[in-house]
Image (tube, rainbow, N blue to C red; front, side, top):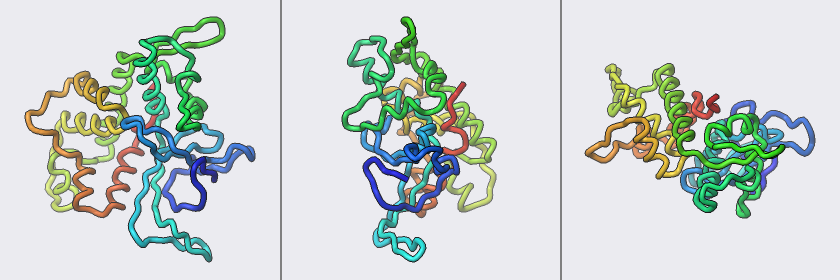
Length: 267
């Protein structure tokens, strides 16, 4: 497995699709840094064989930790959690940026998804179904045989609402509690807690907001019809857990919640 900015070995938890053997010698899975679609900061991702699918990489690290791999000791003691990631979230970052800089001008996608600081970002356009699903976040114009796109906030909000609904459905079907007493109901007592529809929608909005800019998150909140809270928004359960629980447990819960179907491209 290659790394655009990394070398060595890691211990990771990943779906099989992330580490499938390459079909050709030049299409191995590759670790690389890309811009976080929410903050714009460098974040580690993984493209699988042939860059057909994108995966987010979360790292758990403690001091003085190492791994025994075969007969050797791996000094890098991080544990990596790898989950599928919809590449449209990362492409969206560049579309919004281009829309502001070019004042809504239609452009070819390969001229939008460019970043001298992150040379691997054009691989996002190689991911399966991107060409099909890009219509969910852009207006499209075709001139001759070439297609041009520009960011559409209206379409994007509609697409994000579907993502929220997908996440709510998955959380409910997997009996994941998201109410204010989630810690007590899950880890301390067995008392049944009833979550409201707003609890689920607000929690799902919080998960989605980790992958979109803050301004868009606020617009999505309005689009979902969620009422403004007089008091500050309660911390999502996973953030509360970070204060009291094992970091491994926190990452595992994040992995489980996100892997349900949040990453799936919406048709």
